[in-house]
Image 1 (spheres, rainbow, N blue to C red):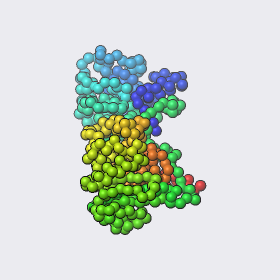
Image 2: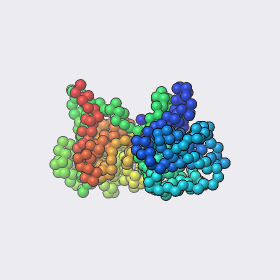
Image 3: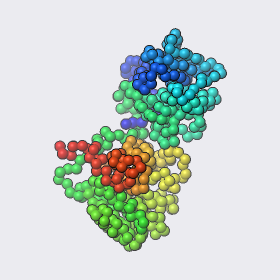
Image 4: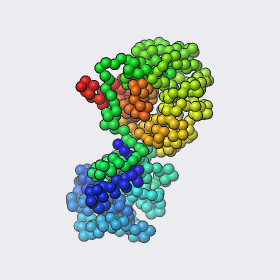
Length: 509
């Protein structure tokens, strides 16, 4: 599903209005009707409702909501901010006039000074101050009003987006001046800013309202950000054919594990096998033979010359994909081995975990990473490579820049894992749960991504599929183990079930 910018949504609005021969007021009426449906489904008419309406179209939506609520027997107090510095939009003015004379609506126009109403935890506040078209951070009286709403402990419903939050980027915004909603009723689409962890505190529950926007306009409007959902993955996943052998399903060369961290190698190998790789070879120090042979006997073992750590990385056969990093440590000999391999190997590879930490000790190596390679850092690993960042938003901006500069794909792991491509496209994942924040989960992901590349999927889709399937495996495993009890082997063992649940019975048809 496309994630549109504010400008993209404006184009879709205009196209819908033009193609359906309607007015903006009609579109606002759709939005208001959808909002009212949510409200009357959740609250009794006896609920005290206080509506804050701004001077623009978001305020016009809020005024339309007040009118439609009145028709359903709900009373509301409406504060319309019609101050001298800002003029009411045409639609806001029209919806204000439609409110006049309604018994169940108390309309107060704020023309100068504002004395806020008494609010408490039993009250329902509808935030219609500003929508996603906001162009400047809130300040002055609007900022004070937002802070008052936040301090009231009332239940807050934001229309389209919490007031003060921009639809895309929010770097530099005073976070005290953003409404903290309990429920956000987004119009037709989620906004990009909804997918950054630092903004979760403002959104509460998010419900996307279908306003029946023009489908051709949606299809033709370009977007750089995409939410990967089940139908996207189902469209790309291929069932295995009846007449295949293990080499048809691809070969994986995995450099993983060291003394004390052979579990990482085990988990990555198991993730690759469960995701359908035909043959997995693990290169590890000699001490890893028994752990691997006893936990994943189906993989081949290639011993490093060292007993305890990786000191040489040589390819003695052709493999469909090479993945390096889970649990290899950062000893000086291992760093040297990673350095040597990256400078010699010119095909794309997967670099994860300690491979990234090794590179971080010799940052000049970033320039030698083969084009087309895939990096899978968590936040700390990313920051070691590309500098300290305090928000997901800033980290994504940096990832977009370095992905394009070095022609590499970057997988920013976390809630809503983001896959950043060199062409500037970003895939945002929709599966997963807090239980995946456990040791070894990322190692499983490395194996799953490697398996999809080995099976012949494009690198871009291998990453998107791998991230989605890995998250879905976590969702399946959590049903048995619960959030607190989920461990990485549970995720690895559920990968096959996750793929099967998507493909369904297609492979038998």
